[in-house]
Image (cartoon, rainbow, N blue to C red; front, side):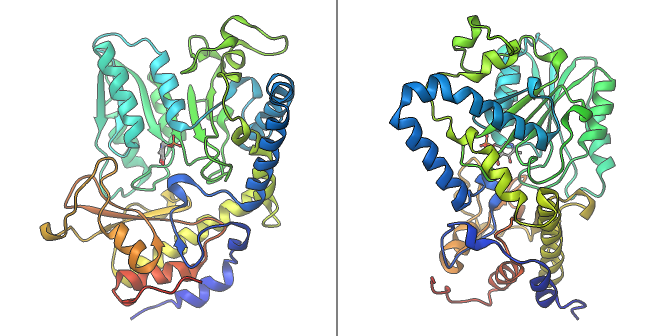
Length: 415
Ligand SMILES: Cc1ncc(COP(=O)(O)O)c(C=O)c1O
């Protein structure tokens, strides 16, 4: 027997802001986590900036850009609580991870720790950096499901050896949607002399960040996911004592052109050659947009999204009997479930990466629901992930439950 009337309970608590986005109509978009989605107002601002740039490219790219970039960095640093001297823009979190791992000089026999929940692209960057130096990428196996944050800490610490140089730790894991205990991991790992590189692709805009206080040697994140900027806005924070030797993937003018008032770290990164800088320049507008959705600003929005993810997870688990992957205390604005193991006849072409289950396509084609279903860690195990952003509402997860129950046999008409 169901104990909670999930649909009416949720509908009242979570007003949706979907009208402020231009997402495909008639569809339930429950996958903000993969690539984010930019609201109409912020896209309009980006178009204004592109227009201004193209009307006078030389003035814009040689004179106007730096104050705009500095203003964007100032606003980003307010959100992530880091000094402006220690933060540079990169295109995305993959670039941030690559930049650190490819700048460091590893010795043969050195070890780079990653977990088996790490995002494939970034785990590859660790494998590449290790291989080319004759070092080793060591993968920590985390349990599935995870019962408590302490299990993650113990599993990681158990793999530390005198050769461990750096640990690449997700702040929020991608396939399993868990907020890892980065504070404790950073304290314990760095206490043993192992620098921590945090892959915070989902961090900004999903969970409160205090990077200076956290004290990790390196933290990279995306603005184009939970801060809702246009795509290709990422950043890299490097603690001052680790900035020397960290070079961008693209070495450019800044290498021999120091500027008054800027440290070398920002000189190196601020001009990576001609590119479209407008995603970075939209950070302020995107933060302002998110801040004004609810009376208590971005903090309130993060709480709302978290509460919606928790609500949806409980509803789906209760209604479908799915196994949630971790405890509620490890949730941000996403949640993942283990589905029953796949039957061999249902298996699809697991095209890596990531090996998507064919249910992803079925849900889209038959029900207009966008939600990732993956083989994880490997077939026959199947994982489904939901996300909750300002444009999502409880009834969308109810439709997902119905689709998974096979109740909505016919596709809904597009509206
Ligand atoms: C944990 C994690 N790291 C890195 C990335 C890569 O982000 P990007 O493609 O923007 O570099 C993702 C993307 O989903 C992710 O979930």
